[in-house]
Length: 126
Image (tube, rainbow, N blue to C red; front, side, top):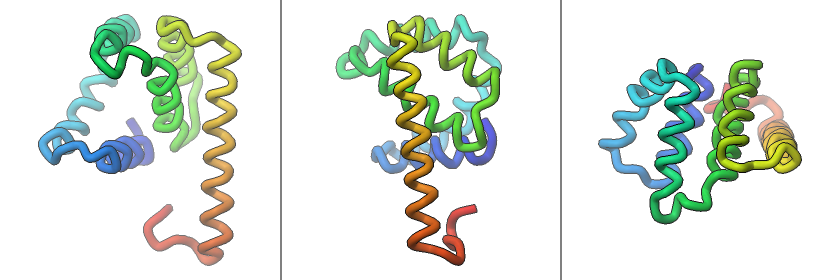
């Protein structure tokens, strides 16, 4: 992942209260994921969705994937991967489109909030 994507992933996991031991492993897990085939990623995702509270998390996984990937702009490869995972998870095209729109709206709202509250720029944001 790019630096903006990695910052998002690390911040997201930190906000969820992941222990430091997992936080330390995230960069390596992300690098390992980059080398996996789409089929392997789909297989692992489907396996995870059989566990407890993750059973109904398909849409959330897609949403979070779009949020992370959009930090530096979604490229064609990322979109294709998201769309194939969504299809495998049973997320319909119309629902996927709505999730993309939701992320776009949230990103626009965030940018507007930062601009309004910090007109000279935020010291901790690029």
